[in-house]
Image (cartoon, rainbow, N blue to C red; front, top):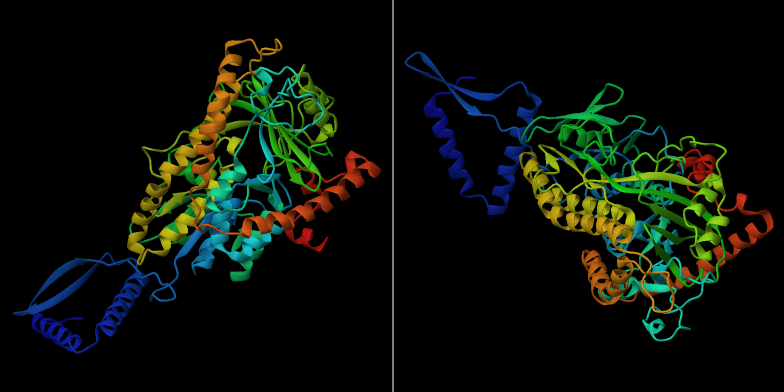
Amino acid sequence: MKLSLSCIVAISTAATSALAFVPSNSRTSIVQTHTSATARCISCNNQKQSTHLRMAEDDEETVISTPADVSELLGRPARPGRPLKVAIAGGGVGGLSTALCMLKKGFDVTVYEKTAAFARFGGPIQFASNALSVLKEIDETLFTRVMEKFTFTGTRACGIKDGLRADGSFRMTNDSLDYLWNPEAPADWFVKFPLKGCADLFGLPYTGVIDRPDLQEILIDECKKIKPDFIKNGNACNGYVSKGKGKGVTVNLEDGSTAEADVLVGSDGIWSAVRAQMYGEEIKKTSADGTRRQGCTYSGYTVFAGETVLKTDDYYETGYKVYIGPKRYFVTSDVGDGRIQWYAFFAFPPGSKRAPSGWGSSERSDQADPEENLVEYIKSLHEGWSDEVMTVLDATPPESVEQRDLFDRAPEFLRSWADGNVVCIGDAVHPMMPNLGQGGCQAIEDAFILSETLEGTKSTDKLEDALQEFYRKRIVRVSIVQFLSRLASDLIINAFDTPWSPHDDLGKSWKSYLTFFWKPVLQYAIFPAQFAYLYSYHPTGNMGGLPAELEKKWKEQHLEDAEKAFERVAEDGQSVAAPSFFKIAEQAATVMSAKKN
């Protein structure tokens, strides 16, 4: 199309004059509509890299090139434009939370998950008070449904017990220093965690656990209410092509097909394919000594885990306990329905594999020695420890024991989590040690803050900057939580020992004296500051009397459910008690089949 220069000037002048008589709000609408229409025309013909105006003057043509505007307006209910199109790699807790949060904001979201179907598979996951606040802010129905399946631990005594001095009766004692001058005073509890006090400080629900399959089922169901076909199973993301500012991203899928999106969110776990491309890593490539794998570092610790149904004398009075001793620690936690889940941490070299692995959503691999009784092996590593540890282990079916080497990675201060129109969240970019139970919590915070950041982005050419803004918002807090999680393991294994006491010879090493002197510092300074910081992010604000109401309602149901489980075990034996976290998968093949059962 040929236009003379005079015509262009005349049209521009006329348009400007006409706009002068239009109200300002209408004028903005006209300009936005024109920009949107222009962008759509240009985007329909992506092979055009510039717009040409040809002007005829003295029978000669001059071609003037101007940069093509490839951006499009991103709409909201009160803002014109189309919905933001988001692809999410990975359908774990972080990916599904991100999907729901974004769907609630009107984004067009698709999750690409490697598993062919969701099985009821995976152990309990801890949600601290900060994560519960985020869940409630994302969606009230989601929060209510999670609370219906929740087991509170932070309402009861939680803390560190002496793995050698606990008398074996599961008695409830205080954590004072009375035993220093009174040889009859119990020294079972070293220090208790101020979980309830810190939650009350901010008016938040108390820390607890929910079975991972229940959480995934709730998230999937809530997402499907908004977009029934939001998830594509059996077709993982294995790469991407970020096409530049305002041009989106091509998602490469495992079956060889591709998908187009404005943004790709990598939420595909610690061995992330998205991060592998972003940082130039090779998926699961392991160093010769086993201490590094795909950019992650072996923490120095391996952990065994198991589950049992057991009514101890302190079952209703304790949430979770950390038994400390020389070069190891043993954790037990109430996970609901009469179940106790335990973890045994050891400072072993990487690859010290004895038990199968069925962690999270991974498959349970074969046991190294099928004839070995893994419970007896773990008991042998706790020789001389309290009978409380032995009682829990003796009640555990040996076939329920699993093992995993623990990897984490250093904070990414020098590299962004984002590359063009692609960003990583959760374990895909900041995996952390499990000691504070913040891995899933931080992934949910990521999901919420990323969604909030993208919601404020008005056009596709601003998306790259928005993803960098998200990284800047999150890097400091996440790095602090990573540091605290790693420090907890390092201190317990390398700096802590059985505390010194004047009444016996169980703790006489320099570490024992150090552990003893740490007690008041931990009790009155470090632990209160640590949990206050973790809970300081709570987008709902103070919830008033709601946490107390939730606890009261849960307490009655918890008692009823636990007693039924104890009766069942008393009649039928431990082997047919509530299934351990890998056995759940064998009982229900998919989420849908689980609903029908």
